Length: 477
Image (cartoon, rainbow, N blue to C red; front, side, top):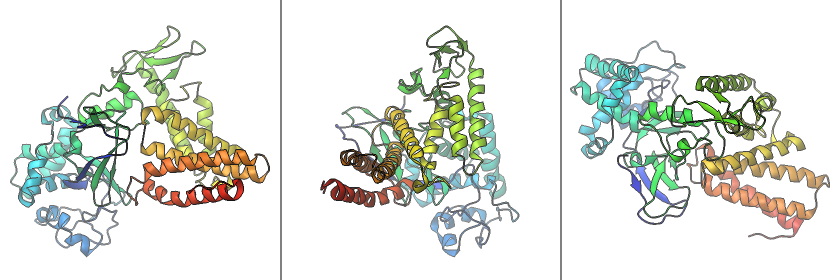
């Protein structure tokens, strides 16, 4: 392990441990045409008068992030094609982040010095011929041959490497771009990390602890998606960050007791296939009860088949019943009920119940409300292990759970199916869930989906407290 960050003291959960402004921001490698001033989507109604890149308006044309960077390069020749489809990725955007990094030498030498402290892994990246050759053509040769920039090819490859290895995704206005945060990049990766990061509207990254940390404990982030299985997470890290993750979750055959990647054994009643060597990229899968084994290619085939069924179901506008059908077909029969494909469906359904057409909260039957509640509790059971503490997915799952409980008990009380004491107990649970969800989701930018959810929580808490006071004669200030 190279450089990393440790706690200099005992740190409570929810503590800000880093607050860093983006050193540089720009388009991701694969992106649809976007405005290079504000990074919003564009449709070709306005073009920069100097370099002819599509922008939003004159204000974006004058924005220094564009005017002082790529515009100065591209105005020598109009690099942006006049005929372009705005719903397709275009390689011309692959050079933007590299240009903005290189321009720091002149525009902000202090930032340039910070940038060059980051890892670029040129030697490892050269071994990935597809990636290296793509950068050679779309960035290095593009800038050297077409615009004659003074930097030598290896320096251009190096700044591309800074982005490839270290950039974090920034989601804003429905568009994903990327940003460089040198201090944050020092944190070590683990698939069950102890921090949560959010990005403000002015591109500052705020890193908070999700669980309490002891002095000397390593502060970690994650480059993977919690709801991916071990093989998928490790492949992603190897391909994007060029290292092999050997964290406790990846080393655990059953992923910390969750059986998140487990396949149902076909030869015995209770067994599940688990990887014999979870750090192997092509493991044999052995049953944990009998002696039956599967090759990895068979496991990949099973998982891919389920994914295809999920994708097919999601093509239908109101797909709740179809997704439930996939669960009914495979949960506990083909894969473990906690398998990542099943949990991914549950995560989707936790939000679809109450939101999609025909399944709005007022429309849900008792059974549908109970199902939403069951789904949310199952999600929390799994993510309490895989993403514990003050994590975004726990916050959103708590919010969805309290909705299901509230609407269910409202119907049940109106129909005389539960007592005042039952109502009180459930409302107190709803209130605790709202408090916990608010604590987590309010960390995020107010313009983000989770931040928008946090905005409505105080009003929801007032409603619950009002019902507790009027119906249950309990005053909670």
